[in-house]
Image 1 (cartoon, rainbow, N blue to C red):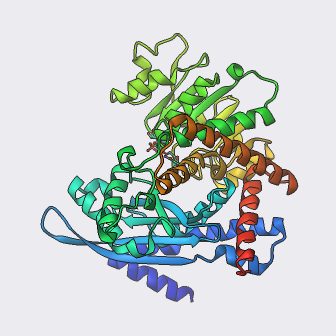
Image 2: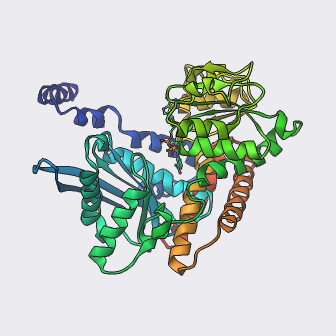
Image 3: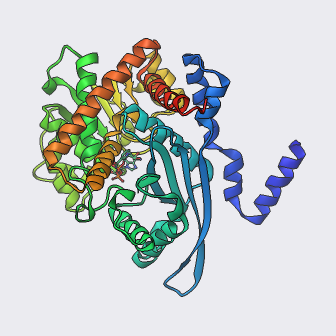
Length: 446
Ligand code: NAD
């Protein structure tokens, strides 16, 4: 057997088609299986129940043509995995990225089903993607790609079936093209078939701030529960990543009275123990600068402000650390050096499983991504509700509904953590799995 594998890998190596090697080397869905094994053991579930959780409902893989500006036609691989729909139509983003493959899309679809169940919105989970480097495409080509994806997938999408949204390298403009293509094919207006659209096409107010603001609501409850002896202005926070999520999180945490002492982007960060004003960093970023170079901005300058690297930011002696950039930032290599008391995972998967175990042993409370960053999908749900009823809410209404969802989800996760005598991550996973299995049982599938 081993010789066959070596022979196969040699063939692939000679052919130059390395994407096949990626499938052999890292099937990310194997990690999902391991995590489900652990949690099913904790919950005392049967093999049959675990099997239902791990079986994707529908996998669609297509290869569709796009005529490039050069006049040549290129085919792209597209995927959509509707992982579980026991609790409602499936929901999840579409990513455009060169590393997209079926195993990754399947895993992300599974985690969407879990996330929607954690915050108790009536959706299952899905994910989609196209294997493409969008930076190599012109705007016209990107539009054709987005429309091509919908032409190849429209039969399995729809407001009552499966509702996409943006993900890595897709945005509200791409959602607008996708909506338009879907409506042209079906001959109807169907704004509820996709979310995070521009407001003028039926998008929701507050969708842009929802993930960051939802993170602040969850942090507020975590602080009350785990750091009760300090006033908000004494609580120090370091935020890694100053994009959509990190910047709105910093802005609203600061408005709530917390002390943001460090922020960063991919180039580096700033540290000011007396507090950074996120509004000034946002203005500086909008002027085209990196966070680090906002150091010399005359509005920011203070005696104690200094530049720090992303590695230093993660290891600062702060109360709360907020990874809001990329996955795998806290690993076995740096987890022993983390000093924060609470970590709010706003990015997806910023802590590796090995690091998670180390942080747990150190007594650091981790508020997991499937709870902390679910404000985005919760507000996508509000957008879908508004589209279906054709009646649109003011920003205050959206925000007050978001707060209700985030607060009640925090307490449900806490209860589950206490019931299973475990951490917040496994508490959240167990809560979601219970809800999914309950729906599967009622349908007679287990
Ligand atoms: P974004 O592209 O707007 O911002 C990402 C930020 O991270 C940028 O400031 C970038 O400079 C910074 N960054 C990149 N590499 C970095 C590095 N090595 N160190 C430090 N900073 C780095 O993305 P976003 O929408 O803010 O998403 C951030 C994370 O939140 C992602 O993991 C995403 O999956 C997750 N998330 C986003 C939403 C949403 O509604 N946007 C919802 C749920 C989860």
